[in-house]
Image (tube, rainbow, N blue to C red; front, side):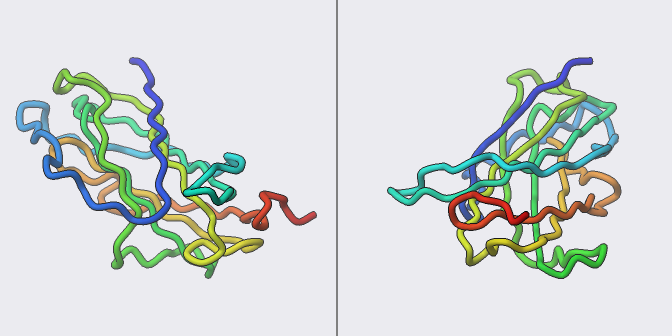
Length: 162
C-alpha cells in the first residue's frame, strides 16, 4: 500500500473538466472510506495580485478495489458548527488523476486548498467543513455521509486570534 498526496488550489467552485474521468467498471464495487479529515493553515497565496490566507483540507482515503486512480473531492462549509453541514448546494470540487493505471491507487491523502476571502469563507470565524470523496466508478465515500471537521479561520492577513 502506498500513499499519494494531491493538493490542487481552489478559490471558488470549479466546473468539472469535459472528461470527468474513466469509469472503472473492472475494479470492483468498493466505495472509498475517509478515515480522517484535517484542516490547517496553508499561509498566504497570491490570487490576481491579492494576497489571501488559505486553508488546506485533507482527507485520508482508502479504497479496497484501488480505483482512487481518478477521484473527485467535494467540500462544503457553513458557519453553524452543529455537527451537520448542508450538502445540498454546490460544493467546491476537485477532479484529479493520481495514476494512469486503472485500479492502482488504494490509499491516498487527498487535499485541496481553499482561499479565505472574507466573503464565501469569512475571516476570524469557526467554520464547519464537510468532505466527501468519490472514486473512478462514482462510488461516494462513507455511504455518501460527509466527514466533518471545524476550524477557525484567520484574519485577512493570515493572523489567528489569540
